[in-house]
Length: 141
Image 1 (cartoon, rainbow, N blue to C red):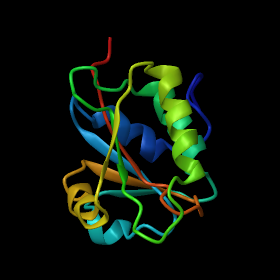
Image 2 (spheres, rainbow, N blue to C red; image 1 turned 135 degrees about the horizontal axis):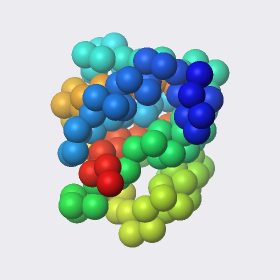
Image 3 (cartoon, rainbow, N blue to C red; image 1 turned 45 degrees about the vertical axis):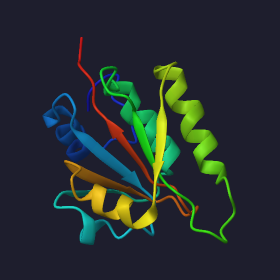
C-alpha cells in the first residue's frame, strides 16, 4: 500500500499509468465494451464505476494541455437517448482537474477503431450505456 494512491486503482493500473508517456491515451470503458477485441492491454476494475475510476486516475495523471482535446466520447447511436448521464459526470470530473478541458465525440465504429490505438484499456464495472471515455496524458510537473 502507498499513501495518496486512490483505492480504486489496483497495483496493475498504477503501474500502467506510470508507464504512460506524454500524449499516450487510455480508454476507461464500461462493462459492456468489447475491450479484449479492441485493446492489446486490458486491465480490469470490476465493481468500480467508470466515474469513480476516472476520479482516481485524475488524482495521479495530468491531462494533455498541448492537445486540442483532453477526452473523446463515443457518439450516441441514433435512436438511443441523446445525452447519457454518465457524460455529464465525466465532464464535471474532468473540469475539476482541468478547467479548460475539451471533449470531442466520434462515431461509434470509428471509436472502436480509435480505441485500438490507445496504449491500453481499463474496463470498469460501469453498467450505464456510453460509459466510455478516452483521455490523453499530459506532462507530469
